Image (cartoon, rainbow, N blue to C red; front, side):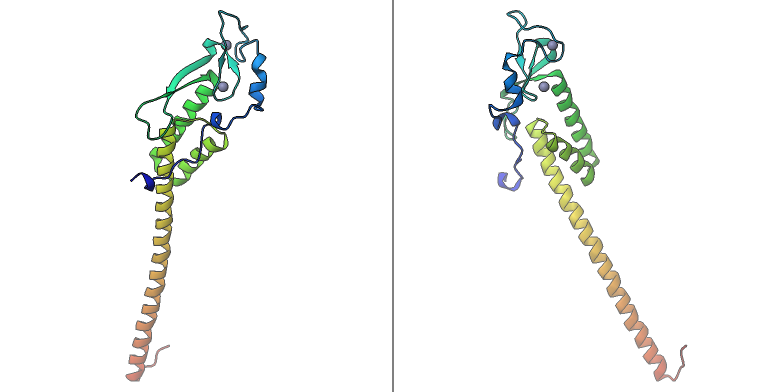
Length: 180
Ligand SMILES: [Zn+2]
Ligand SMILES: [Zn+2]
């Protein structure tokens, strides 16, 4: 059921980007931000979808990405500078590794690093991570609950033991046995 899975609240920045973004003011950029090669009719500039700056073809990487977590095929073309591309790849790898540990705190940390730094990771991976995060969070919650119940059971066992002890004491008194 689709409704049962959490939908990502995170959206790529390009959807909410406004014309006042600092990167867009650099429209007149004449050189590649990374290698400083001059732009001309042979050296065409490419706009990085992530950091919104301009790069030459050698310092940028174009790829097709999934638009939505339910997408069957990659349908959105994006261009990223090599710095952003590398950062995204590393974040995705870090998140995959965190998810493989099945440890809530590890996944939480990796996911939070991506959210707080607004890194445009693959939407499907992001969705899987959200599902994994929620599952681990619930499991952790249930585990803590079981542990607290176990503590209560210990308490009941103590009470029961106390009652058994009292019964034994009373039984001993009935038999005129003096206990210290
Ligand atoms: Zn360049
Ligand atoms: Zn970039």
